[in-house]
Image 1 (cartoon, one colour):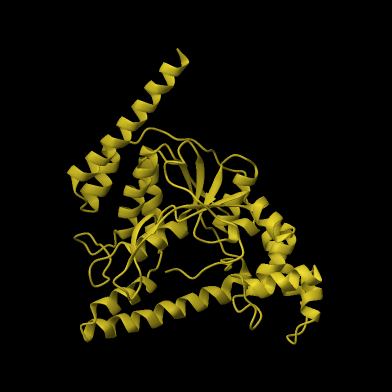
Image 2 (image 1 turned 120 degrees about the horizontal axis):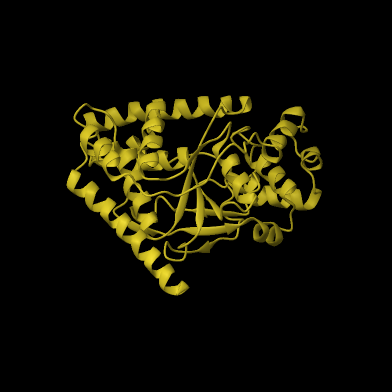
Length: 345
């Protein structure tokens, strides 16, 4: 799976939820994050991605279409937010991820050669790449479904968190915890990977359920300010200082920040020297991210024929299945409209 963002597992308070409980809520989905998950999960027996007759990868479109349709049916109103230009300080992390993918590709091919299907599938998930043409195809599909997508000037999670912090949307939906650092009042995890999942390397399956994390509850339970939570994250390691500080995990970082109250004081008590301008710049990325107000949030009726032309006519999806899914979307919308009118009268 995707290795991104700061690791706050084990110290943040979570609450299990369900798609039913999210009914009527509006969510900003980290587009890159969701597409990466679809590319990693939706694969064939030996780890090969789904493709059309021209060899173009369609795993991301399959995930985007059917998962989004499922959420629309349940009256979960979604907005997808896509990354813009990453901050300069993210270059090290981007290069690290590229190396991981390159190494995983080599291991994947070796596993296929020796007939290790399970190993091949495991490594295949790590080779996933979200390419520019995939993002453009995803935006085209979302537009035909009547779903708002927003192009962030920089980090998609920062833009999503900004809209949630303004109460324009209820929560950010992402696998990463970074949204909390960017100031999102709520984070929903596992939204796009909900369901039965096989554990890597084992013949065991687990049920993955959505979970809600509320920023204020996290800060209260940890007795930290948001600024201190960011300092804690810097100690562990973020996308902008991926190595963090040696030997420091979430619990140790929490202890250091609670004891010393600031990052610089905590660093003075570590053998690894002190914080400098780079760490201050990382803090500013989270506290003063580059965002935009140039967007309009709306949910429209899907354009059935445009969606069918794209998915079935150009990408070889089953027309019967696509139309059936679109019919369910339209039916659910009509039922909600009728219920609303009945309540009114």
